[in-house]
Length: 93
Image 1 (cartoon, helix red, strand yellow):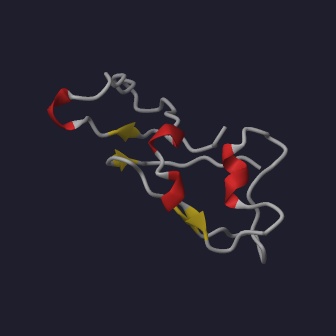
Image 2 (cartoon, helix red, strand yellow):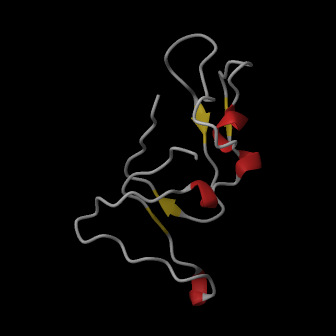
């Protein structure tokens, strides 16, 4: 599972033509998995280790992951299929 989450809510579809969205939590602390909203071909990591590439995140095996090729920092680019508001992102190691 892609560990993207946090207190984020996808924007409502124009004209109410999309599936019903769950209401945000009253305290705003509910985690929402945004992996289904990602435009995966448009997402990439600039400094990925070739042995642990970006595509490992979508396989579903928790032993695989994404690693930097040089240091502890990752330069990631995310594209979404619709507007989303991301207030927090949690990544597990």
